[in-house]
Every structure is written in C-alpha cells, then in structure tokens.
Length: 431
Ligand SMILES: *Cc1c(COP(=O)(O)O)cnc(C)c1O
Image (tube, rainbow, N blue to C red; front, top):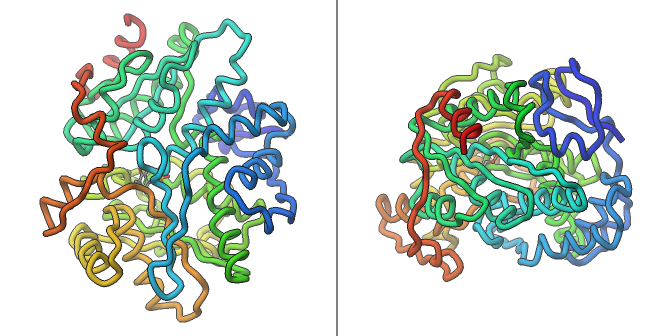
C-alpha cells in the first residue's frame, strides 16, 4: 500500500518512505491509499497489546517481521490504558500512564521503535526535528532517547510550557537537544516546516519529522480508539460510541477517523478546543480562517493553524460531509477551571486542563443530543503536568507521581534562539 500527498503534486511513496520523509515536498501530508478493515476478531481480544498488534498488522503490510512487530508493540505499551466511568455513561480513557504522562507517548514510542527497526543495518544517521507546544517534545525525546543513529532537535516556545513540561524536554541530554524559541508554537511549527522545504539543508542532513504530521505517529493513535470501544463492547455489549477529543493540531482526532475507517463503530466525534477554535468555527461557518494562536491553560492545544486539518479535508472533502461526523465546541479558560473544580467536587475526579476542555464540550453536546450512547473522553494528560496552573487558580492540591518527580531535580539545558528560520538553519548546519 502506498501513501499519497494531500496536495497530489508529488509521487506516492511506501510506508517506510512516508515515515522518514515526514512531510512531502509539495507541503501536503501523507495519506494511505486505502483504509483496510481490521479483522472482526478484534471484538473479542482482551488486552491492549494483542489488539494493537492486530491493527498494526493490518496497515503494515508485512514490512516488519511478525515476531519483531509483536515485541515492539509489547515494549511500547508496557503501561495500563484504563477506561474509567465518571458518571451516566461518560467514560475517561486515561492516556497518561506512559513515561511522559501524556497521550503522545502512544504515537512517539511506536514511531521511534519502528524507525529504529528500519534503520538497523543501515549506515544512515538521521535528525528528528520536532516543534512542540508542550507534550510532543518530551514524548518524542523519551521515545528516541539513546537510540543509535538518531539525533532529536526539539523547538519549544520560551515561557509557554509548564515547568514540568520544560524539565521533561530539557533534562535528558545525550542525543536530545532542546531549542528554546523566542516566539510561540506557531513560530516553532513554521520554522520546522521551512527546514523540511529547504532543499539545500535537506541535501546535507537527513531530516525527519516527528510531529503529528508523521503518519508513523498518527496510525498508532488509532489503537486506543479500538481498545476503548472493545472494552465497552465486551463489558456492556455496547455497539456504538461517541468520542470526545480535546484538540489542537487535530492529529488525535484524525487518528480517530482512521480508526473509524478501519472498523471502530463511532457515531460521532466531539472536537473540544480552547479559544483557538478555527476548526469548530469552520464546522459552523464553512470558512477556515487560520490565525495566530492565543495562550491558554490547555497549552498543548494552543494552535492557530492545525496541521492535520488538511487530512480531514482530504477525507471529507466538504464541510457538509464533515459535520455529519464531527461536532466542534469552543471552551474558555474560565469554563475550563470551572469544569475542573465541579468534576473534582461531584465526580471525585481530577481532570487536567485539556481533559476539562473535552468534558465541557461533552456537556454542551449532551444539551443538544439526548440519546444515551456512551461517550468516551480522551483524557490526554496527567493533571500533575499542569500542577502550577491548577494550584494557582483553584483550591486543589495536585500530587506529582514519583515517576514525574525525577526530572524536576535535574538542570535544564537548552539553547535559546530567535523565531527566525535562519537561526534554526544555522544551528543545524554548525552543530
Ligand atoms: C498534543 C495534545 C493535545 C492535542 O492533540 P492534537 O493531536 O494536537 O489535536 C491535547 N492534549 C494534550 C495533553 C496534548 O499534549
């Protein structure tokens, strides 16, 4: 199976090529030529690793030996993926039990291991370039930490990530470098894109991307959509679910659409955004108006021009088709805080700011939809990652799990640069 660019101005490539190229030269995004349905036996599989293996086999075309693939997947997902009922058929899918406590571990761990499997035996050295609004960088850094022949360069916006997020990015060392950019996430993303489109640079170093634009990160995020449906099917005989996805770059939601195409029965996707709401706005007005991002408490979703929107358009073609399956809601910081406080009091459950955006979006959805189809909230990060913003605004104490405490005592190492592409290029060519 091949992968085409959404811009269709460049020839289709294999999975391996799409994985390493990341961004096609015509500035589109890679898409699979077809979506294969996962074998119906997935309904009865009773653990996350076996289910993920079944799905991965479906899209990987025997590119990786079955035994190797199974070992990679068991190594990737050596942590629990619990589905917790909050109340009245609303469930929280806790995607934060991986090493960096955000859902990005699912994609980053898979992608790094698959890349390293392909690189084995080759003499190639590659540089992974990644822009992060907070959580991608640490998940990618962690996934590639000490992997042979791979360097990772992370761009993050100075002063716009939480203390814990910054520590996770800047304390690993070894093959990981953090560039602290005087600007916002959109600047970081733009600079990375410019690097990929710079033919001169790309002739000198093998650049690869690890943003959610990379198909190798997107696919594995479909595993937990299958999984959470499968759990409700086995335990309660549920036949169809609604997913609520706190969204920024819309990679996570696009992975959900992939899962639906591959066989997860999804009635609807609820896209919860913070005030960076270009997609919900598009779903109401049909006008897509990207703009500079604004800073919010759910900082990993502060995205003014969501990169995966191109994939959604490629799948749905028109706004009319898209609104049949996706409904969008915008949530303010005040609503986010209010939701964290209410849910903490009434459901005894501490949401992180991103999950709280999703929860509020579910409440708005429920006002318009009275069916009782189970709703699964993708709880994308551990609340401790946002200890500062929660404790500064609410009378709630947030405990940090031991696994996250370790990096707090380490020294930050970063290189500060301005938000100009020339500075990034200079670093990459002179390091
Ligand atoms: C990255 C991130 C999101 C947004 O995911 P997208 O795939 O960019 O839409 C939401 N929540 C958290 C905690 C994140 O790290």
